[in-house]
Image 1 (cartoon, one colour):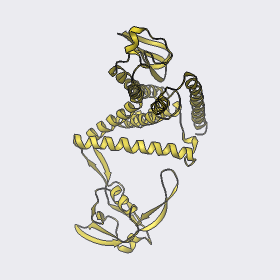
Image 2 (image 1 turned 60 degrees about the vertical axis):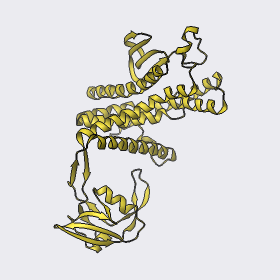
Image 3 (image 1 turned 90 degrees about the horizontal axis):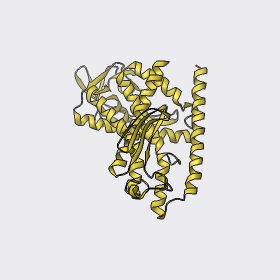
Image 4 (image 1 turned 30 degrees about the horizontal axis):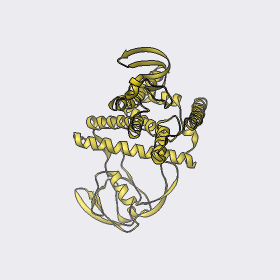
Amino acid sequence: MSHSIFAFVVVLGILVFFHELGHFLLARFFGVGVETFSLGFGPKIYKKKVGLTEYCLSLIPLGGYVKMVGEEPNQPIEPKDINLSFSHKKLFQKAVIVAAGPLFNFLLAFLIFYVIAQFSGMYILKPVVGNVGDNTPAKAAGVLSGDIVKSVQDKTVESWDDMVEIIGNSTGEPLKIVILRNSELLTLMIKPELKVTKNIFGEDTNKYMIGISAKSGEVQHIPLNPFQALAEGVKQTWRISSLTILSVVKIFQGTVPTDTLGGPIMIAQMAGQQAKEGMINLAFFIAMLSINLGIINLFPVPVLDGGHLFFFGVEAITGKATSDKVREKANQVGIALLVALMVFVFYNDIVRIFTK
């Protein structure tokens, strides 16, 4: 348990630090004074003032904050501090400062994926046939276990995923598939069948298949140069970001059950498990959480960064800032929503513990 708590604090500390660092660096870049940079909330365990900024470690490790000069529009500002005031900066500058937190979470994920790709390379499943199903197009065409798929419709196949994608995206016409068998290249014409399968969200989906499965253990390691690792970092960040957004949409649609949502207890348990598996697993877990944190913070909910950006967008369109009264009411609604969400995910966490 203590192992999980320690891993949780480390993971959350990294995520919060990068998020707040984004706000801090862009605030300083645009000349905004930062009064406090805190990891955690509540009573301050440690603090050190450097220039205008007080750097703090606070007791409750469930977040952090950057307090800027003139952050509140109605906050009285000394004339000498006007040039340091956040609320007196141009609209696009304020928007960039606010957006920098979530964007730094995406940056953290990219850096982690890049480093993993650079030092560990890629592992791909080779396009080697394992089982050939009975009464399937592959069986009828003469495909055998151990055959290596080299190309489909003259498109080179490097991995099992390449082959699945090409066949799955076909339109049902006969496909020219070149296989390697006992050092001999053979060309087969196979007409895929449209099958109903389950996607990762448990939804029925139609997909063209030929009735083969991969041979287990046929994995290839591919080392990557720095440029390939860079591309892989971008690809992984985009893929997981897209999947996360789609998961959120599926939750609202009711496709993904809400009891899959987890809170701090679930994160602590998973952090502990990943830490036991090794540094690469833990780093990958941090990257995925960082993307989740970045996306959640971009939701147009008052008190979140996305809520501030929403108000800035309204101001950009209408030419006037939202009134303090409207902001105050919106913030109250936003806080209520976040509290309700926290209560719900804590409930899910507790139910999981007692139903194991």
